[in-house]
Image (cartoon, rainbow, N blue to C red; front, side, top):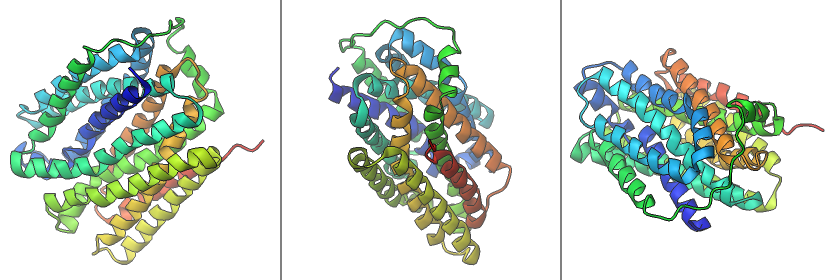
Length: 383
């Protein structure tokens, strides 16, 4: 595949992966009712998916290194599609949660293989720009996919929110299987943990990874609690909540475009630190303003959009800065980045589900704690 084709395939892979997180969110109240379960099911269904993504991710990095990112991408697409189709016929909450865990594992393989394509084909500033394009797919999954999920749920039922990405995954996998495989450089066999231990002991790798992970955890915690918060406290309908996807998309899009420009004009380490500072300011605004006026959703929506601008800037930068420390080991690097991020997000979502974040102020305080941790991780190392 050409560089442009590889970028397009990586973007589609990430879009499909993230659709497993956001597409069904507007349907959560309906799913809870139909499967006869409770509100904890909402956070648990997301936490299990993220946990499933994280647990075998390091294994996927080794598999991709030996089989090739192209081959693993095809297999991951097909498995991800099968799990999605199985979710469309689930009949009880335990079955649903078990399938979400398995679907998360296949999504982890898809994410690793898709992202590993970029360091294999781009370098330097162009790699940061490639990651910023990849973040556009995250924009679509945050906003447009949320809106699409609301439309699907309204007009075709909640099961269609799993059927559509499943069918798309299978079709993409079958299409890629017909393409000529790119040349795969031989990979020197090492012990399973060797590459990962070296990366974890490299400060220039792990610091931006942690910064991006804390920012990602904010988004996951928000998505875990927002559907019930908006539909119960602010009396929004599923469709109204889906419409929130558009300002969310615009905010993250703005951030990714700033990151794209930053890659050519500024110090990326300093830019990452400033982006994380924006997260702190925005989360502080959410907690303070919501405590003063808890009846208005605007004090949750506007600060969250600012958080997304900051994360849209920071996430491509953190991935690019981290991957530059890993020449010749892109699959393992992307696997470790994914493992750290998904583990952090799953723990944050699971922990927040125990705290009953039923108001914008409480949600804002949780986001603020994560934002401060992101800012501390992103501080440029003093020489």
